[in-house]
Image 1 (cartoon, helix red, strand yellow):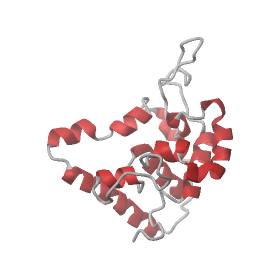
Image 2 (cartoon, one colour):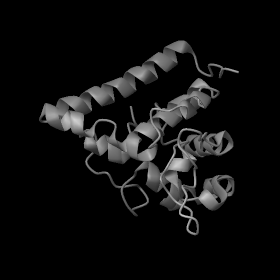
Image 3 (tube, one colour):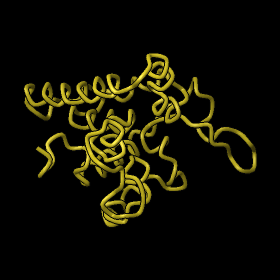
Image 4 (tube, one colour):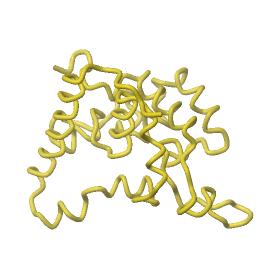
Length: 186
């Protein structure tokens, strides 16, 4: 079953244009072409070491709004201060909580501003809580402490836990930090 559009097409197009503008600005601000090619996609490749892979085919079973949040979280191109600072849009990458840079990892795991909203995500993540790759539907190389086998098994056969991914998306939506139009950010 394909995900249903949850927002008007013109809103989705405007959001996509905004993400593309952030990517283009990042490319334009990069001083040398060799740096562009050496860094593009590094965040995503570290997050999901099974790319490209069939496991990503399961992800279209989410709405367009959920897909937008997941894409931002998986690429690092989003409205968090770490990304905006890299693009020279804000003066600092610090989180409003004052406890580190505002990154996907910080928001998911460490930011004290979202403790209450994080409870369901911690339950969904269970023993994999703290593994950002797993929470965002990526295959990682973490190994079982006793057997030394990859926790996610062979990457060719691995599939993301969509229940966990959807709970992660819901949590990120609750924070409002990946919304395209955030209050006070126009």
